Amino acid sequence: MINIGRALKNERLTSALTGLRPQEFLDLLPAFSEAWQKSKRHKNRKRKIGGGRIGFLRTIPEKLFFILFYYKCYPTYDVMSFFYGCNRANTFRRQRQLSGILEATLGKKLVLPKRQMRSVEDFLKAFPEAREVFIDGTERPIQRPKDKEKQKANYSGKKKRHTRKNLVIAEKNKGVGFLSKTVEGKERDFTLLKEQAPPEFIPKKIKKHLDLGFQGFDNQFPGHIISMPQRKTKNKKLSNKAINKNKKKSGIRVLVEHAIGGVKRLRIVTDVFRNRVEGFDDQAILISCGLWNYHLASSR
Image (cartoon, rainbow, N blue to C red; front, side):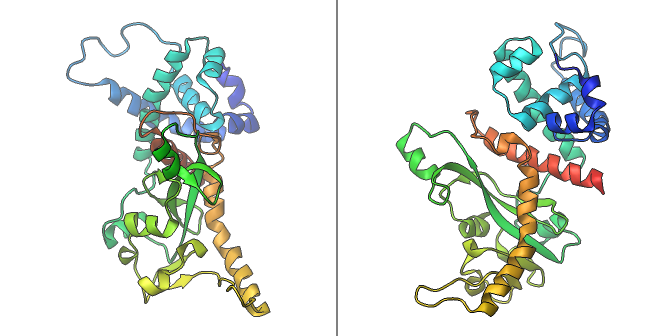
């Protein structure tokens, strides 16, 4: 069993094991405990809360540390079972249970990104004070599917491997305000934006920082304020002025890369994704974004 008390005395160690600072971990405990107790209260319950066999995670801090450790380090269930002295099937069941509790906790903390944008009001709820937003797609490697159709759908020509993709809309403070549903790796960024965060629901006066994956935005959505690098044509090189402008735009747009990089501190969204439970790839990136937003909010 991991010695939580020892880990919490060392900020570097706590961050390496959970992705949070010791104080951030302690501040998250009350909301996590409340979400845990709420999950145990239901009409058909026959035992009192706390009754029955005592599991290998006896306390609320142990439960929170367990699930944060899983997301940050992404060990196999065999490794988890070795650390916690239990059967690997038990670690799988507890991971599935506590992932839901952690998602509910982050939702209560109001740090989960919005998942749908079907009106201007939805955008303003996600970005109430934003004057500019940063839009980009992010991909995560997955195991090669056995089904040939799934292989084709999930193969990313850009990454030269099988991936899953999400669209991220971030703020200047590097917080993730919107996260699209998880889709196949071959999906284009611009297509994903039009389907899940239609630009007509983003006010025109809000400046949008885009990369070349969104070419054609200005033609399809005229009147919007955008910042996009100029692309070199086949037979004509860019002028020095255009090159310098591109560098300046890239220096500003890098903020969305910092936001995505913050989310990807957690190895569950960096390593090759091994889990095959349907929908868990989407839940994993959602919780990872929530933990990053929580970390940012706690650091201000």
